Amino acid sequence: MKTLSFFVTLGALVLNSCLGVSADITIKADGSGKIALEYRVSQALESMGRLDGNEKMPAVPAGKLDFERSVSRIPGLKLSKYGSKEVRGASGGRDLVTNVTLDFKDTGALLAFLDSAGSRATLVQEGQGSLLRLIFLDPSETIANPDLLSLLREVSDGYELGISLSLPGNARVEMIPPVPSAKLVSNGKKVSFSIGMGELLTLKDGLALEIRW
Image (cartoon, rainbow, N blue to C red; front, top):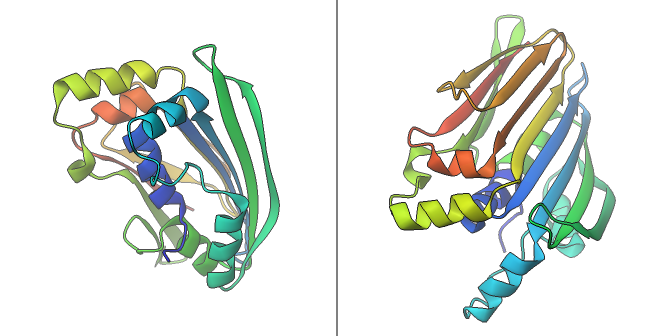
């Protein structure tokens, strides 16, 4: 059984479209901290997928039991909050919103949750500073079929990918490559980034953030 991770779930979100995700990460000076996640899934989209014969496809986002199992496999990680509710969706339908808060004892636990494969979330030391690299979209994940891309952009309208970080030092952030429609703000120790899911789907060169502090 695979360990649940942020980027595995994000990949499912991108491929399924019509849903959004946000992550608010706090890293303290000793490397400990917390990550607050919110997943928003269109109930209509999930029903359509199951009617198409995808009953075996796991629900996105994963349930509480999936998080509990994954947390038990990552030393230093703790599930401190889990909740879900139905709300009005961006298109007027119903969305399932899931909120999860995880506490981590060190950055190793954080990275293990963000990317269990160790290729899309990395943290290295640069002199006396740190560099966190997050790869949200790999170029190999782009959608080549123009009709499918157009459909996914249409149904993903109103859904976003967002991430914010509170860091132990003043931050410098770079978006690679730059995307004019994305929102990127760096203010002291705080960094925030957001992009529409429909816009993310159209990127042909991938998307990454490099955050230094």
